[in-house]
Each structure stands twice: as structure tokens, then as C-alpha cells.
Length: 213
Ligand code: 5GP
Image (spheres, rainbow, N blue to C red):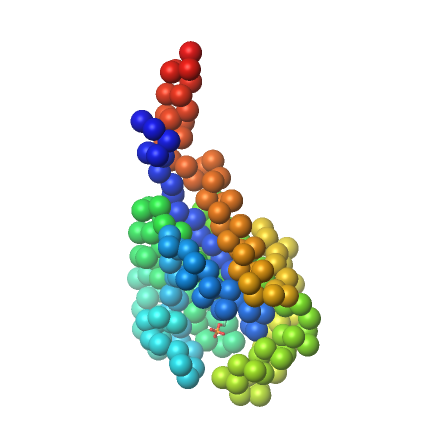
């Protein structure tokens, strides 16, 4: 056995933030840079925004189908956010982790709490904060995908969402997209080296020690 044969269990990287803090842009860049990272595409009952692709951004579904999914245990976690259901399909996550690949989650604090109860050892929780409320509002307005009423609702929710930052392992203030992406990458690379994620390590070290004596 050599060090090359040490296997790795994949990890679950959660990114949460209030809407408009830049989480989607960070996720996109991260996925483009990291070969071993796959996005968990959530199911949702909310309507599709212009430009969103079914199966890529979300699996768009209706409440009846979502409820059936819940009853069949198809979701690892689910929550109601802004009046719509959002849930993480279980199958992809289990398959990726077992094959040593990492999974990225763009989910809210409610989903993160459920995953933390279910799979605490696999979870790495990152919370993204906006540099200021002015910046948050500017980003929400410039998206121009939502109505003014929806934007106002999201601003009101932001304060509530931000109160959950202490439940996360890492906090990034998103002043600059490139820098924030690089910071998430540093977290990911360090977390991959955690002892508990490295399978076969004890056999490998035993062999090293036996041979050294
Ligand atoms: P949006 O409608 O802007 O795409 O997402 C609204 C919120 O729902 C975001 O905070 C996003 O992180 C969260 N969200 C998206 N997918 C899931 C999911 O599968 N589970 C949970 N708990 N939250 C989700």
C-alpha cells in the first residue's frame, strides 16, 4: 500500500446567506474551478424565473409531487422558504459522498440544521454575509428578476436569516467575488484533508511504521 491508495469520503459543503449576498455567483465559480465538486440541485415548488433551467437550477415541481416526494423519503431535508417548498434530493448526495466526491448545497439555515442533525461528520457549513445592507439591496434590485414586493420581502427576511450565522463553521463577508471564491476554496481544500475523511489512513500509517522499524 502507498499513500496514493488512501481513499477519501466526500464532504457536504453548505453555502447559506440572505438572498443577494452573492452566494449564487460564488457557487458558479466554485463549480467551474473544482472538478470533484457537484451541485445538489434542489426541488422547489416556486415558479421558474426568467433564464432558469429546469434540472440545472432547480427541479421545478408542484406541491402535490413535492408532498409525494416527502412521503417517500426522497428528500434529505426540506423547508418552506418565502411560502414555497425547497428540498434536497437524497440519491445524488449519497452516491457522490460514497465515491469520494464533494457536494455543494445552496440551502437556507433550516435545511442546514436538518443536515447537521443527520450527517454532522460530513457537513462543512459556510455563511456568506453582504458587506452592507445598502449593497444587499442594490444586488437584489439589480437582479431585476423579482417584483418590488418580492425584493421588499427578501430585505425584511435578510435580518432574520443573518441571525443564524453562529450556527455555521465559517463566515465570509463578500466584499469581493474573487476573494470570496478563493476563501471558500481554501476552506474546501483544508476540509478535504481532515483525518476522519481519509479512509485507509490507519493501515497506511501502520505500514509506514512497521517498515520504519
Ligand atoms: P431562491 O428562491 O432565491 O432560489 O432561494 C430562496 C432560498 O431557498 C435561498 O436561501 C436558498 O438557499 C434556499 N434553498 C434553495 N434550495 C433549498 C433546499 O433544497 N433546501 C432548503 N432548506 N433551502 C433551499
